[in-house]
Image (cartoon, rainbow, N blue to C red; front, side, top):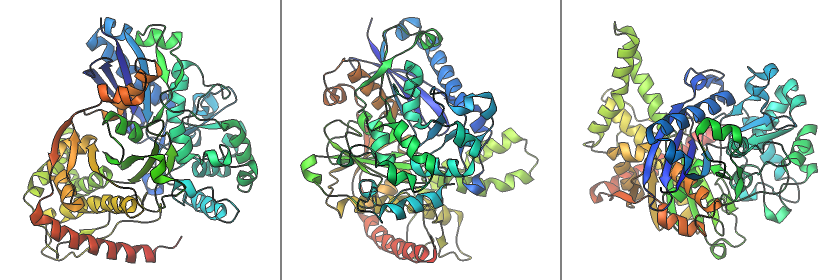
Length: 547
């Protein structure tokens, strides 16, 4: 019987299990389960940019997907799983008590959103993020210098500060704040107690201000400026972090029984989905991996000597070992990509509510809108005068985080069509991605190749083609639907000593290229002109937004 490794990918809506042959990289099977309360919109308020997830949803979906996949593949396969790797969205932290229990798993906090996971897309802490950025630049050391120069409301400390100031009950019960990518491996291995919980290098460096040059986390006095308990949480986080080729522990007896696993299954230290997506894609040095979903994450690795002491401004961090040990991982991304399309679909679909169609029929009709528009987009002829949009429908992550920014659409007239509008939306996401490319390249980080992974990259040829035209670069699309989970499985394989290094495991197990989108020379020029127009409109809109 072959040996297997499993990757668990916790996305915004669901968790995905993937089981991989540890020798060949063949994807044996996968299963998805959705978060029940989240799908009902519980604990979320889009108007206030509040997005929370209940840990019971996360655990239930993880269990359901695992058990359903076991039923498909058979007990023998699950008994021969040697390791589990975990990736999650991020920054998505949760408050825990002194025993490591998530507060919302306790009865008194069961329905308190501030005791739940604060999802990456939650922007309720804009003011706190701006305050952290401002104070960081007033002292002798700018603690945001390795995270692009500004702190984001999507990140750990801003979210924690918001919770502490807003909710006294949660504040008093909280011992620490833990990223989901650290909590899931701890739950599976029974290491949730704060002293035994292993914090990932990925989350620590990109979101929690960890850096070697200041000995781990910034000092207590930095955090005490914001809230007296913030420095206490800082002490309970600790200064040590671990790369994802390290074991967090062994699966506990309870989880062995629930999932049908053996007693020797290693659980790897977790990381964020996009970083492990780059691992699953088999990306080499200076190859940009775009993880395209509801938002995007852009990941690139560089050699130490190429980065040196430089700090790349405007991105989401440069962290030693956040992707592959021994390399510098750099992260950027857009706060909305697929979410912009989903918003557009919901607006266009609203008239369906006025019809006699039942709810299921309305949903079926709504779900057909974007695929149909995508087909029409393949034949769209862009012109300089067509409507143009900004992609900041959920703020801007990079370059230069600013979650106060909003989207705009320019150039509408009575002749504008639905195809014009959808093209403007899609094109804006490509332009936002190009701004990230230029942010890297203009600061000396070469992009030798662009790789796309995630659902949109494999489902919409039209969108990927426009991106290639805008970038004026070929885009490689990987064959796996589950590159993030595959990357997690690869980390598990290394943590379990099935491979001697990440490089060896990536060579053996990572996904192959499925197809390549080449830029169309007849469209490159017009998109170059329209991109300059995008930058001009973006500059105007940003000048009108006050912090």
